[in-house]
Length: 114
Image (cartoon, rainbow, N blue to C red; front, side):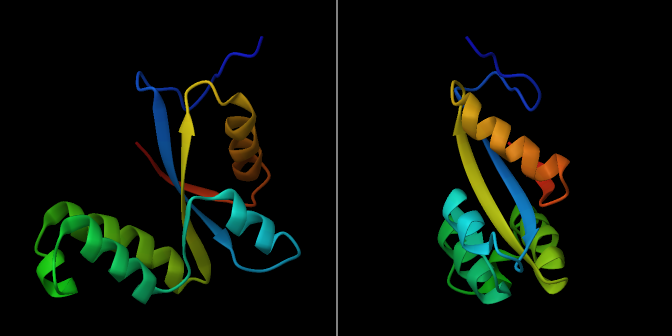
C-alpha cells in the first residue's frame, strides 16, 4: 500500500497551482493532466471574474485576495508559462507522484498549494 508523503494536508484533497513552459513535446499531455490551464492574462481574468463574482477586473482586484492571486499568476504568464491548477484527492498517490516528478524534474514550478 502506498502512503502519500510531502504536500500533505488534513483535507480530503489538495489543490495546486503550478506554472509550466508552453513548449516541447509534452505540451498537450500537460494540458490534459491539469484541471485548468491559463495561457493568457485574458483567460486568467475570466477565471478571477467568475470566481469572485465581479463584472470587471478592476472591481475584482479591489479584493486583496483576488489581487494577490491574479498578480502571482499573471507574473508567470508574462514570462511565457502556462499557469495550471490541479486538485488531487487524498488517496490518489499516482497523480500526486506525477505532480511531484514534474516539479522535481524542473518541468513545472509550484506556485501555491491549498
